[in-house]
Length: 394
Image (cartoon, rainbow, N blue to C red; front, side, top):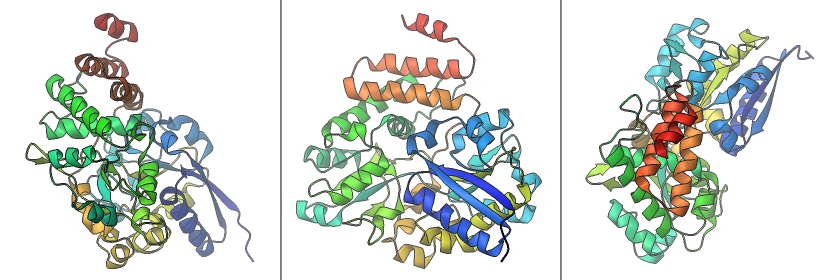
């Protein structure tokens, strides 16, 4: 029996979708490579969204990351550029089989810093039984969505980070793409309208939405005897799988607003390798194993993962096991909007999320909220100090 001589450590996030596929792929990889041992740890979903990578990259070899952190990771020289180590043909296959912009979201400055092993964006989810009982179907338009909300049938994940993502989505639908100008997170008119639309929906929705992230929302929907529909929440195929939730959910696309189908904000996760990794050859081999087409559509998805490879989303077995979650939501993934990734974006995202959440909870001068978000962007980019921003808003 060969004892493992090479030890790798990894960090992912604390959910079946994020943790179990890494455990399963590590177990199988180490069976095939008995000289290697891989140990995975997990962190909360909130930490996954906004915790800095600098400390994690010094402690772990393998990092499951969110793409908006790429700019800071590159500026800090925290990650291996995978294109300098993996075969060009393999990476070309990954790019050609990306789910939406997932693969490209981990490219920065001409290099590829992670493999898109997981893909997600806000999608709709619902309980067919409860909608039937209410005598309605899934809404098609924003007005129909508000009508369902007035009947107490709607839940929206509206914690701070998700609320910001939804404001981006609504601004896009209104024709005001975020970050179109260097010092502008949101154009004023569209940003104000987006905030007001989201606040109206949250106020009409079931109580507690401001404290629920997507995971808690999907679980609540699966357990509910009254709330039947979520219009947009980062998709988790797990809740559409028999045996995972008491009442499996159906997933689908997004409603239209002003004649435009909503374009949600891309999420997902990538597998990166720390610069501090002492065994990069084995780490690279494992990363390629996890992202390979075969593993993505078999072991990865069977272990509860939500793959980043397009072949898995189109696979009949994966769809049969998830009430067609993958096929039904793939068009929404393909048109999802990708956030900026410049150094400082995570600081902006944290500040702007709090501004949006506070407005949804308490109301206030919506023009001022947009102005403060734009100030937070300028500060994050180093274009303006915090004191200057406060002075302009005084």
